[in-house]
Length: 188
Ligand SMILES: [Fe+2]
Ligand SMILES: [Fe+2]
Image 1 (tube, helix red, strand yellow):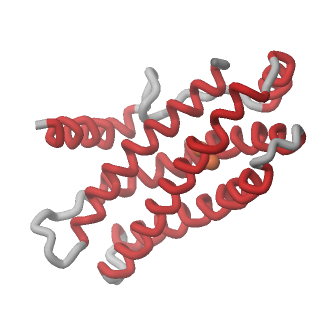
Image 2 (cartoon, rainbow, N blue to C red):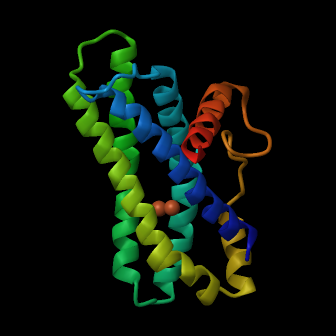
């Protein structure tokens, strides 16, 4: 498997873990929740989505998807829909981040508004990556030659993941520890 392909697969796995944690924290805004939300975790998770998946993962996929469309794969229509969803996801990230920034600045945002926007964002992300996993990612292995990958490499420069990568940044320490603790608590 090419290293770019491997990184994209890893990103999906990591993004699912992050969305699961975000969903857990968002549930604190439900009227029957007995937990208080950790706003730092929510803001940090959304900030990470904005600076890594939105800035590297989706643009890298766009380069690869364009190449699959050029090869006239039968999934081309679906691939075009997924490219449009990338734009939608980026807009949604900014919208949800703005809502939670308002909360951090003590502006009035209703719990209902937060829940609706955040759950819509999470569902959109999960459905998007599941469609990619099922219908498009297998095509990377079957459709690209070594020459194709060399061309892709000219446009897609690998970047380290600031949360899950081996040289993760200090600013995501709290979020990373939160994810690990939550996963361990679910195992028990
Ligand atoms: Fe995507
Ligand atoms: Fe993806």
